[in-house]
Length: 57
Image 1 (spheres, rainbow, N blue to C red):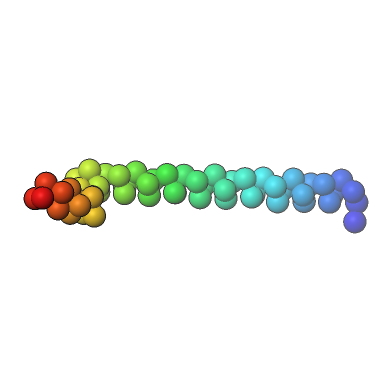
Image 2 (image 1 turned 90 degrees about the vertical axis):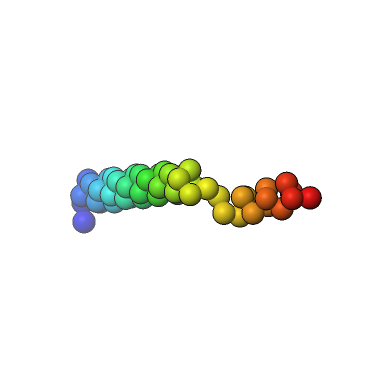
């Protein structure tokens, strides 16, 4: 196997890893935005319950 061929394979795998990592990061950020939108729309259920308990005292 040529050294240049091996280098090309290594570059390919590094580039593939970076693309997959970037896609996963983007998917995670979209998921976080959906979670924030849900909390904004419906409120944080655990946080609201604690606030109600404190205000009733």
